[in-house]
Image (cartoon, rainbow, N blue to C red):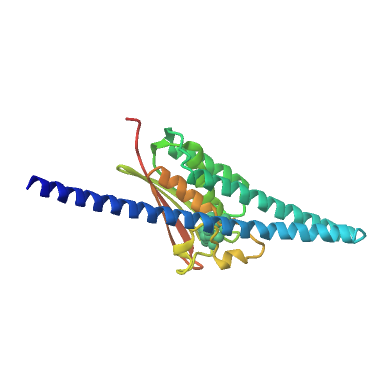
Length: 259
Ligand code: ADP
């Protein structure tokens, strides 16, 4: 009887081991597929500015006597595309670091002060929009101040990029028991129902924003970076939006203090 029980346990253990192995194989395959997709998308995104730079340089070499003002336009174009390339590479490196498990620095952060400082810095630069400060409650939490500031900058930059001049950007921060809830809202172009579930995908840019003139110059990596940072702090980020009405980005972070 003991032998029989032993055999049963062995079969059960073997089955368990097989299931665990199958699950990890599946997970590994999914990760590898995601990596492949990332590389393919990255190559595609890098090729666009690179082609523009090469094309413009070709013109300058082939036609050295074109009028000065045309030459200036071409050089400015090269500069714009080179800046875009730089931004793409910078953002991709950040995400790659996130993928390879880069850790967050852990220290006590005066979150309300961090938000207010970033808000005021941005308000000084962007006189084109109205900055409306709603309630900002006192919040101290445990986390990486530089990365959290980066989240704030990404969200503020998006709110400004996708809201026409004269529009409004609003900020609020609430202390809700064990969590802090940050909200950045705008009165801009909004995100359609089809685009909304995809905006956290790497390189995803809604067609409407991709083809806006002037090009707002996004990389489609801002929100994925913001999500990586928020989730590394065990928080959540989500968006509510209505086309032509505006967008609200919510970030919920746990208020952990140093145990
Ligand atoms: P990007 O660098 O293009 O802004 P993000 O990853 O930050 O990339 O955002 C992805 C897409 O989500 C944007 O291209 C845009 O279509 C949409 N989006 C993000 N924030 C807003 C916003 N506040 N209002 C309207 N659309 C937004």
